[in-house]
Image (tube, rainbow, N blue to C red; front, side, top):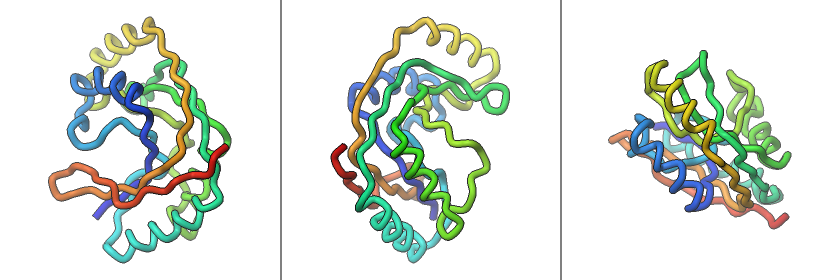
Length: 170
């Protein structure tokens, strides 16, 4: 079984993201728009329970964090992905760092770039066309994230919430 840890943005941000994801994201039906804090981890039932306990201990004193979404970005040429760029308080980076502790998730393969995916599984030409259009779109969302979630993957490939953790008010 796989699990991951995410934060869900507001309905307004999700609706905006889904207006693109439904056409350009090959994972649209599997998971709502989200900010990944810890990517997919392979485990068993006991490992998921241990992860949930670890996350409880990390989040009991963690503070809610503000995010601002000012524009789109892309991971080209590494991956053909277009995303909403998420600028966040240090709290989000602290959570990510704590979850990549050697006793838990281990070190990350990539530098952490908080984002909300809009398009993936697309060709280079599609990426250039969509990204060009989106760069001209006015984007400006600001909000506070006050909870994070541990999700696990079902047999059909979709993801569901296992546990939700409320963060302390700012």
